[in-house]
Length: 261
Image 1 (spheres, one colour):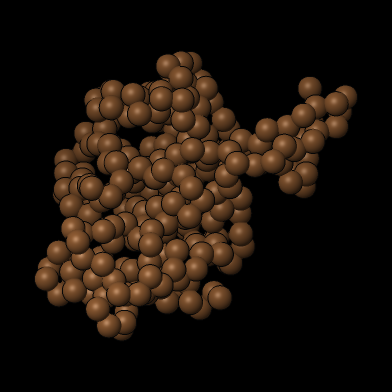
Image 2 (spheres, rainbow, N blue to C red):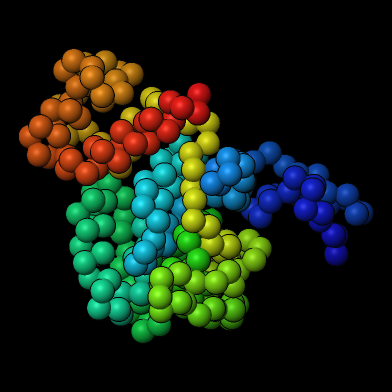
């Protein structure tokens, strides 16, 4: 066994060559990074294909959009998992997320506790993808991974009745092989998924819901969808085809990106 120091620069998902007790990291295909609330940059995992954003009630506002944009820029396919669908209050959350994201990214609704709704997600992951689950503490990432791969038996914590948030039961990121094919990384919960080194052009291209609508196109290829003439996004907002709240979220992220450059 080769011991890997935290300061080594290796992360879960890295491919390495081992010679004696020396590790040589092979080139990474992809990297998923996020910025925390203090401005620090964290490398979540490497050599991924897909990013699963696990959400439940009280998931942080804007987390999904930031994670989707980060995934797309990193050339990962994002998808949303609405966990704990056995809870009555989750139906409104699911309806809202389907309104926002269906047609943009896959949305899976399930309950790990009741073992319902797992088959479509299992089929998706078993295509040979290497994926990672991200989300805040208490959304059910470890419970979901236990349901998908029972033999790993991850520790699952309790969730506060007061705020719906869980304690950190996953303290390190770990990679697990799924019996039907594919691999999944379980990560500690985090409340922030700040954007890292993303340009305004990348944000405008990858923001969910701004995909091409019919034949409508912006006049300028580098359009930021703010004040530019003949902007298709602004026109779609005026027509009600892009909801005002989605456009407001985009402008919030655009200001965030511009402030970081």
